[in-house]
Amino acid sequence: MEVKIGVQNAAREIVLESRQSADEVEKAVTEALTGTSKLLVLVDEHGRRILVPSDRLAYVEIGEPSARKVGFGTL
Image (cartoon, rainbow, N blue to C red; front, side):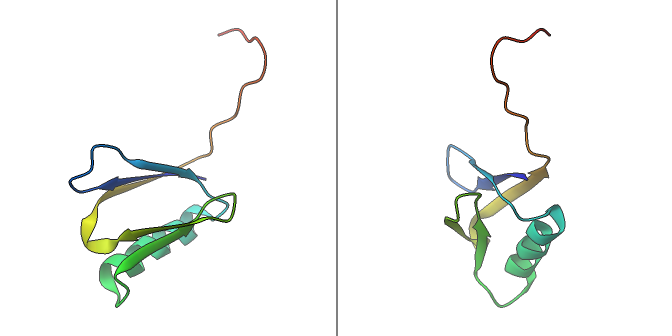
C-alpha cells in the first residue's frame, strides 16, 4: 500500500510503501486526529516506524502499490 503524508511547513511529502491495509492506515490516521495519541504511527514494508505529530498533518493519501517495471517495456 502506498501512503503519502503531507506535513505542514515541510517542502516535501513523506512517501512510503506499507504492508498495512488501507483500512488499517485510515484507522491509524483517524485515531491520531481524534484520539488521545499525538502521533501518527505507520510501519513501512521494511519494518521501520514512521512517526508524524498529528497536529502537523496536512493530508494523508492512501493508494494502491505501484507495480515495479523491469526491463524494457512498451507503452
